[in-house]
Length: 291
Ligand SMILES: [Zn+2]
Image 1 (cartoon, rainbow, N blue to C red):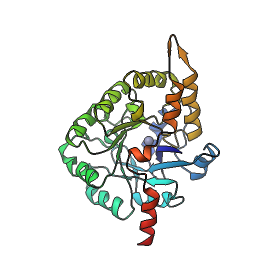
Image 2 (cartoon, helix red, strand yellow):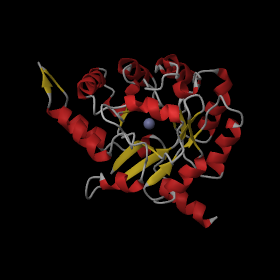
Image 3 (tube, protein in one colour):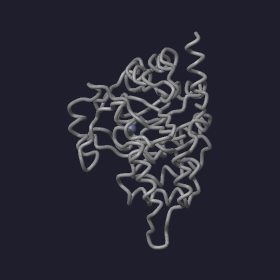
């Protein structure tokens, strides 16, 4: 089984005009900001079970807002292969209600946060109720870490080191630092190495192969392969593109340095559902439909 821990549901109207204009800086060629399920499925390997964690995102400052109801509808297209995460923007009123509603009404199994896009620090004590709620209900928290193309989003909020502060105070909460915190990968590696429940994903990195090769060499030298999870950031990349990009790095050799091919394969097939406490998602679905 392959677990893609990072895919989006962005319905039409999710972004402001300004966000869409800034997003032209995302990749060398334009990326469609639409997330049709069909295109995702067309780019899956044959004969391979794939389970996908899906979320929208909320960040008022940057002009991104997807209601969790839309994510719930999206996941309902294939609830046996998709797991929904709720989103909150803690700078906006009502976020604590949205947190409860996402879990209770929509049965979301985790939380997506965008600290830089929304302009907050994850270690801000005003977020303590969120971390406590996540710990109490076993909701893994996936945070965008790393840079952005959005002009008004403050880079300082995104630094992986902030999650060290959170993890020291809430060691039971499982976290995923998205995109290896690019280009602060070294900071991500040292933060996830310290904390048993912290992981990072490799989503949206394969199209910068030089950078990713070096980042995975860091992962190798600090011995944190087991903390690295597979992800696509769909629609930014797909499962097939990400697998091919990772495998091409296993063939690369720079001077006397190379990445172990078996670690790349283990990364692609890592059982993220067990690591994140989500392996029961199909049973939970069945329990819910019996209610
Ligand atoms: Zn993303």
